[in-house]
Length: 408
Image (tube, rainbow, N blue to C red; front, top):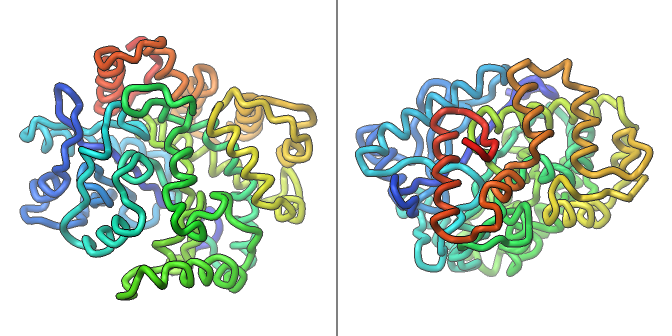
C-alpha cells in the first residue's frame, strides 16, 4: 500500500546489550530473541513493536511493527519494550544501554558479527569493509521513515530532507566518547559514518544525497553507480541496492519511503520520539513551502550541504552558521548557531507538538544535545570510573524513560 506524505511513520531504535555492572559489551542478542520467542529467530513481533537483530551481535533493534499514524503514544510503547527486554536480559546479568556509541568499547577485540540469518550478507560486508571499527560496530541510531506516494511527493520530500540533514546532529548528537577519550566531535558516530565505506565511496557519497528528485534519476545517478561498484565484490549477487545505499537519507522505493539515518539514539524513547516529531514537523513546513520554495530547496548541491554538516558533526548545536543563503531556507536573516536555528524552528511549530514532547524538547533546547550533557557530566574526567558512572545513569534514564540532565 502506498501512503501519502506524512500519513504514516516508521521509527527504528537501536540499543547496545551490556553487562549490568561494568557495562561490558555482550554479544547475546540471539539469546535475548530466543528468550522472547522460545526459539532462535531474527525478528519477533511484539504487538505494536517488533524486535530484530543487527549487523553485530550486541545490538538489538526495536521498531514500529509496520507504519503508524500516531506518534503521541509511541514513546510509551517503546518504553514498555525496553522494560521487557531488560527484564529478559536480567537473567543474563545484562541490560540495554542507550546513546549512539559505547564510550569504552574496543571494536577490534569485542566486535562479533551476527552469526545466524542473513549472516552471509554480514560476512560479505566484513570481507569488503572490515567491520572491526567504530563505524560499523559502535554506531547506534534512530531511523525515521517517511512515505511518498509518487514522484511528485518524492521530489518535495527528498528536497526538504536534503536541506535539513546538515543541522540534525546539532539536535541529536549523543556520541562524544570513543575508547575512553573525548573524540573532539559532538557526533563521533556521524564522523566515522562518513568514511566507514571508503573502499566503495559510491555507497555513502557525501552523506547528503545528490540532487535527484525522481525515481528514474535516483536509479540512474545513485543505484546504478552503487551496483557497478559492488559487482566485483558481490560475485554471488546477494546484495540489494536499497540495502547498500548508505547516505544520510536513503530512498526505499521497495516500500515508497525515505529513511533518515543521521539521528543519534538518545537516552530514552521520550527523547527519541520528541526529536523525531520536531524533525517531522519542520519537514512539513519545508514541504508545504512555509519557509521557502521547492526550487530553492532543490538548488542546493550536496557539497555545499556537506560542508555545513561537517561543521555540525564536530561542534553540534554550538556551530555558528554564517551561510546566509542556507539560513534563509528557514527564514533566518542573520548568522545563527544551530541551537538558535532549532529554537526558532521549534517556536514556530510547537503548537503542532503534544505537551509531553514540548516539555522534552524544551529541556534539550535549553540544556543542549545529549553529547553536551554527557561532556558536562563527566567534566573532563576521562577515567573509566567517571565515564561508567555517567553511563550507568544513562542506562537508568532508559529504564525509566526520563531525560538525562547531568545531575540524576
